[in-house]
Image 1: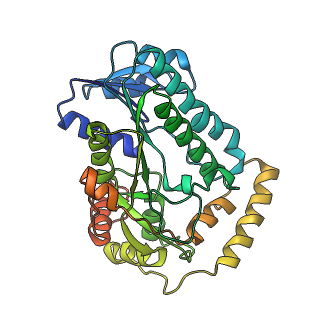
Image 2: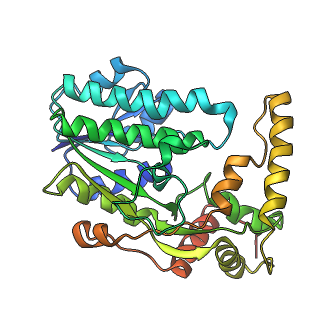
Length: 329
């Protein structure tokens, strides 16, 4: 068996690598941007290829040998308008390059990591049959993820490649250093300014990675699977983290109107300084929204599992503490 992985050095990509190795995959090819990262992955038994999804030549080199599955995990998740051009190149052009290279090199199957953001922000509980509103979103991340998954499903419909699309919700878990881990660190340092008023579905990165391997083995194609998780308000998440860390927690959320105004003020300064602000209007929109996700299809067909929030918070805190990222108790 041979697979190729984009985004191998990221949070989810690292867990997926471990799952693939545990599953006995004989060869794992991965795109890397630097020699140092390539050497580290080579030490884990991975065959690294220097390049990126923005470079079709490096993609075709990685796909030169017959490949059973391409796991396209790489994405630009920035919530800042200053990164929109870069995000378009990665999420849209990069996905198109992966599909074109796979077809040129005889790739058989792709498991594409999309996001619940491709659905846009809707009030009802999301299912796979919910309308795709992301293409009309003012938030570039939502728009690019919607366009990218459309490209993948169109390639499947036209017989270019067999595709399965996964739409994870908010991903938490051990190994995170940049995403939701920042909230853990701010709470630990007593620097979290307050809790946003929205709610989310919090997925365990380990189970999301397992679902990717299951999607590879799934007998059908042209399918999408929502990967949700424990539903909780952001206030409940923050209080659970604070309890695990032994730190104080806010008792109520910050009003959405205040967060929106504050973010637009920071955004205006960011446009002048050309530096990403600490809080963007796009990020505020995500955390003021009430996201609910129905994962029944993935549970039924991919054996997807949802980790209880206290367990997920405890495991994440334990990993952060083990790696010296938390203050002494």
